[in-house]
Amino acid sequence: MESLVLVSARGDGVPGGTILFPYPIFPMNVVDWIVLFGTIFSIVVYGVWKTRGSKNIEGYLKGDNTMKWWMIGVSIMATQASAITFLSTPGQAIEDGMRFIQFYFGLPLAMVIISVTMVPIYYRLKVYTAYEYLETRFDLKTRTLAAILFLMLRGLSAGITLFAPSLVLSTILGWNIFLTTFLIGALVIIYTVSGGTRAVSLTQRQQMTVIMGGMILAGIIAYRLLPDHVSFGDTIQIAGELGKLNIITTNFSWNDRFNIWSGLIASTFLFLSYFGTDQSQVGRYLGGKSIRESRMGLIMNGLLKIPMQFVILFIGVLVFVFYLFVQPPVFHNQTLKGQAMQTEQADSLRLLDKRYDELYHRKQVAVNGLVEGIQENNLKRKEESKLAYQSIKEEEAQIRKEVKAKIAAAIPGAKTQDRDYIFLNFVLNYLPHGIIGLLLAVMFSAAMSSMASELNALASTTTVDIYKRSFKPEASALHYLNASKYFTILWAVIAMVFAALANFAENLIQFVNIVGSLFYGTILGIFLVAFYLKHVKSNAIFIAALIGESCVLVCYFYFYEEIAFLYYNIIGCVVVVTLALLIQVASKKENPSEHLKGV
Image 1 (cartoon, rainbow, N blue to C red):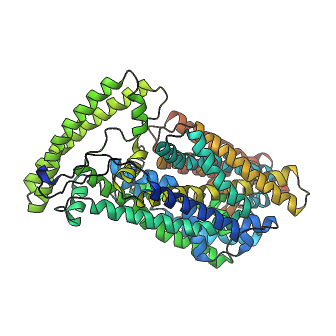
Image 2 (tube, rainbow, N blue to C red; image 1 turned 180 degrees about the vertical axis):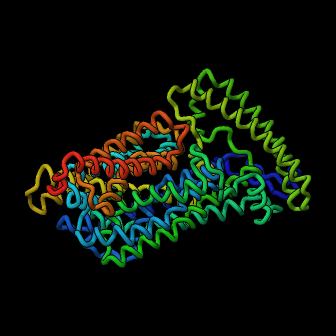
Image 3 (cartoon, rainbow, N blue to C red; image 1 turned 90 degrees about the vertical axis):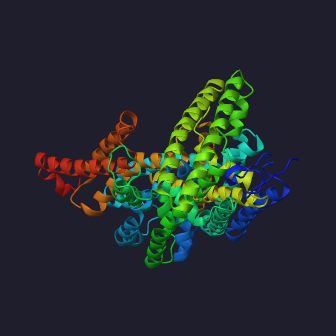
């Protein structure tokens, strides 16, 4: 088996200190497989063993209210941080810089609002799910509508969450994605069905330890692989000069997804809905020992989430700088490209590869000039090198566009968006054995953690808000416990089918947030009216919610390019609240005595 050959960055006849990796390495060896499967199976076994024997629905769905604040905080962060976060976010930074961090700027404010207003209400009513409160406040149809909206969005999201690691495993092994999807889904089912909420929360501690340790290690190695003559300070300056440290962007535009305004305003609406009304998150802090523990867990998430995302995005920036000195592939989904090379498009793809290789040598001259300009503090040299680099990047982008077109022609229906493969390629081809297995374990652990929480929330909502309330109101505790387990399996199967059949055109980290934004604004509007507008009754909010959701779907299907998806959260919420007020006022004018009946 050929091994990795590293040519010294100093001398050896390599121009400009370039690092060459002329011989590809085999992605996985025995050590990697031992680390990967050892980590995954130990987490599954631990979850089953520690939570064996849940006897009632209280313990299964709420974990017997035994969780401390730090466990809640870890569980919340692990639920939100799926494999998509660690597979897709670095690729987002490589292509678009760090401005995605602005997406999380509204999170701390949302955590404070939820801690002060929503948490006490949930605890006072002793609810299993967030949607139980809506029947107390409005009526059954409003509760059912909100539960159905949640089931739709979280069911789709569970499929996306499962798709990411299935994609990784199918790429590495060359297996059919149906098989890898089933394998991962089955592992999650084992401990989620066995132990419920407590199993999810306990295993998430181990998963977060693996996740953050592995990602930080990847960042350190990415920096250590840079040429010896490029210091850490040089690395930062290179990234900044080439526009990758665009942490804050202040220009407002309705179709700009990530800027300071969408982050502080639109994202606040999204996070209020996600953490305040989404059962996958509400279920995490409803299992706390007290209101204080739940609040502290939420605040912990608000304080640590932005630094965590910053680290992950910065790792992407380090990989971007690494690929300035090491030629990246023209198309990062090498498996798909290999399939295309077996078709009549092979000759065209070889010509594009040759053009790309020639262009890379020109880019090296520009990059080395930029490094020298930075080290010599030569402003003119820096500007000339940046202009040359940007011109070459435009040519590269055109070649990549042509490659994607050829692959799409060779394999109709193939997903040619390859951003999600950038970090995976780096891990498989340039990290030491053992670390490769650990990084893959990171992605699988994150996927299992997030999917387990989602399945637990889907089962809770289906059992409590739909099945128990509308279909089987009188049954034993054991019956509802078993029903919860069956619904967990049902939703896992639905997620597996969706993951295996879906073809995502978007970057996964964006797509999962787009799906949420289609529903979260409407759900948040319902809850805001429930919490703060006590004179609005059930019929008004029900009609307003239906219209509000219709408006969001119209924006998505007809104005997708004109309105960034984060603003769907504001549109849905504002439409629901405004219409509910107007409908309630109109109904009182038509029948002044109606409000006395509580309608």
